[in-house]
Length: 258
Image (cartoon, rainbow, N blue to C red; front, side, top):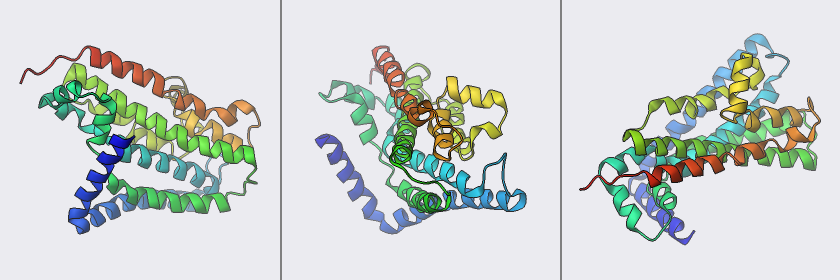
């Protein structure tokens, strides 16, 4: 943790060297969330509800997934540039250092500009909590907290898998964006508004439904089973196979020889 905080302080000093650029980039990230919010607003203005879900209910789903993604992207985007580390031999230096490889990779790039998206999502999150009509008991607060933690862990695990594939392909495969950025876009809404196969895929292959759909149903009172309450734990556990796959990739890494 001490080493990571050192990385973090270096990144802060780096971005503050160009304050105006940092501000504009953060604003751009905030506008990304804002335009997604506007598209949802106009959709509900036209149709009133979607499959029985009201605008304020879906806002809770929307803000939770955007907050989780922004946090995971802020601290896990070091995996996004991992193919460059493989190509230029930087991972060779990482391997010989007496520190965890993952810690060094995520510390190499901390996307502080994502704070714009996070602040925007947090504002919508606070509004949705007060307007969705949910009576907030201890169990529902716990479920909401698990949704955020599970979302961060799920996207972090997907970023890790994306990086691990680079051990074998040397270049990142863009199809993984279907599950990261694409998953974020899908999870703005409850997943049962899509085709049944979409819900099944994001339940049994990529556990996105355990982050935004099943616990969401519990919070708004459509399901009362304890499984729906603790379902985000499945997304948290997604880190385990992601980490195993990462270690598998590390053991098969071959130095660039430069």
